[in-house]
Image (cartoon, rainbow, N blue to C red; front, side, top):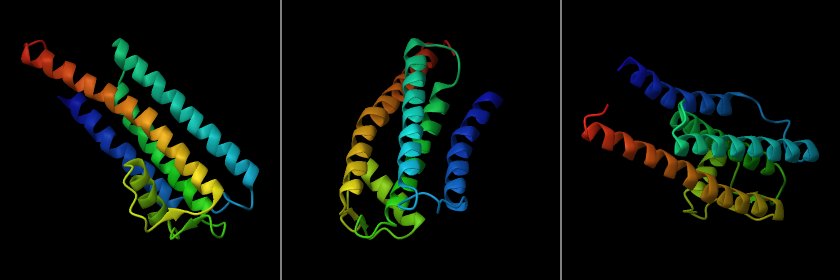
Length: 167
């Protein structure tokens, strides 16, 4: 039971720490002042997060030891923070993202885009912003769907084991 409590605390604490870092760490260096470094770092971090997600989904599907559910949640939250930071950096370029002015705006737009809802109050007007939005939508479809499917599979298999009295 203590192990289960630790896992749930980590599942809640990890995203809280990521969001705390997002709101407290200055990210003013990223954006139009250093475009090459910003794009390279963005691509590198998304690649690492994607590879990590695929690794953990594979571990979960194969039933390998570890805590893939916890890691999947943390990696998905990490992707959320990366996209929000990218949007915030792009908002410094006039005409790129209309209506995005703060970190809250960037996080809001990222969540709305990840949910594929889109309210229209913040919208990509520039070509770079539209490319990143399309990339986020594809990233969401591939990795979020894969991650949620793996998590659902794990929850279902645990529920079946418990119903049979095996856990």
